[in-house]
Amino acid sequence: MQSSKDKQALKRIAMNENHVLHEITPLMEKDALYIADRHKKEFSYPIHNHEVYELNFVQHAAGVRRIVGDSSEVIGDYDLVLITSPDLEHVWEQNECRSDDIREITVQFKFGMEDDSFFDKTPFFNIHHMMKEARKGLAFPLEAIMKVYSELDRLSLLQDRFEALMSFLRILNSLANSTGARTLATSSYAKVNIEDDSRRVLRVKNYINENYMYEIKLKTLAELANMSESAFSRFFKLHTGRTLSDYIIDIRMGYATRMLIDTTDSVSEICFNCGYNNLSNFNRIFKRKKGCSPTEFRDSYKKIRIIV
Image 1: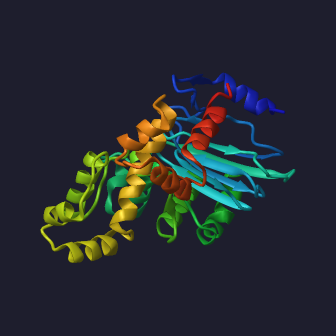
Image 2 (image 1 turned 90 degrees about the vertical axis):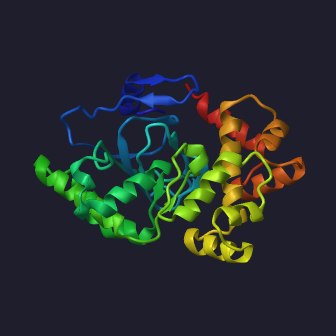
């Protein structure tokens, strides 16, 4: 059963051509924050996106499935995610959750990313960097969640708007200085511009992004970086934390999931369009990365999207 709040919210949203609800949030132009702190028994709000940024905290909801872009995970008792892309769809699905007292705190805001803004100043460097990472969705570990829990817990109780804003900035600052946060959607799925502080690695990443549909040879990438093949492989792993092959797979999987959702191309067509010349190999890698077959992934998203 939908709550009255959910029904009212549904009236404030418009549906785009891909069956993802584009939420029109209550946050007005002059508002700093919109804070919703609620207890409920189930998740019923459909998959959606919105122009504003969002920090979403969920408590006592073990078994809920969280979907952000092409990321799908079953959460534990505590979940905290920051999303700063207007195009990145997301939803928390009831799935196997049996809790009868789920708490959800949602904070929506629209500041902290503009290049010429106040938040581009040195004291906010870590927050600014975190916000850019969160264009792919950013999930925080339990240790980071516990550091901000008390601030989150009382945020909706603060009557003074200035104090509420300062409290929220402290939350963002604590999260930005914590370790262990991880991005959820792949860069290629989220349509996020590739960035890197190493010109060599950036040159290679751009090449991969532009040529993922073709065979990519280590020799070519090493030459782009002006390094030997063995030295480049070590350099790339040291700089990105991932092997070159894993990085290429993630880029291709991001494009593949986007095609599965946004096109009617067959799985075999998508396989070859993403640089694989062997369908069984593509299916095997996809299942290892996404936990299901390409067909199951497409069917699952259809069920989620055609909820309206």
